[in-house]
Image (tube, rainbow, N blue to C red):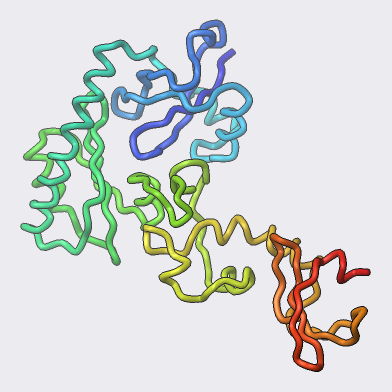
Length: 278
C-alpha cells in the first residue's frame, strides 16, 4: 500500500508520486526529496500529502487520475534529499540564469521570434528544459541541435502561454498580494471582457489586466459571487416604489449593501438594502 504525495518543483510545477505508507512518518510538508522522473531523478519539495494530495492528483488527471492501469506502476519518491542534494539543486538554480542568457543569445543568432522566459535543469543534469513564449509556432529544430552541442544534454523547448509564464516567474498583483496563478489557483482559465462588464468594472484593459498582460484571473473565479449577490439587488435603471415615492436605481454597492436612488424631482440618496425592502 502506498501514499500519494504532491511534489513542487521550480516555477510552481507540481507532480504526484508514491511513497510506502510504512515510511510516511518521515515525510512532511516542505521536506525536500529526490524523485523518479522519466529520464532520471529530479529534486522537489513536498507540497501536499494524505487525502489532500490524493484529491488534487485525481483532479489533475495528467496521468490518468484514479485509473488503475495508470496507477499500476506509479513514479516514486526515491529518498529524502540530503544536504549535498540540496546544495546541488541550489547550485543549479544559480547556473540557470547564465543558461537563460546563453539561450537568449542563441535565439537572436537564429533570428527566432520567441521570448525565453526561464530555464530549468533536471537535478541529475540529464535534461535541460527551456520555457518560452511566442505569438505563433516556432521552428526551433536548429536551435535545439545548437543548444545540445553547447550544454551536452537532452534539450526540451516548451512553449507556454502568458498566464503559464506568470505562474512560473511569480510576482505581485494589482491587489498587492502574490499572484493567484502562482500561489493557489490550479490553472489559468480564459477570461473575457463580459465578466468585467457583469461585475460593473471599467472595460479599460489596462485597469483590469495582470502583470502577464491578460485579464485578471480573479474576474473568472469571483464571477459567481457577483452573480449571486446581484440577485439580491434591484437592477440598475429600474424604477422602484419606496417610502418617498417612485425612485430610479442609479447604482448598487454589493459590498456595503447599499443602493443609490434618484427621485422624480432629481434628488439623489443612498439607502441600505434592508431599508429598501421595508
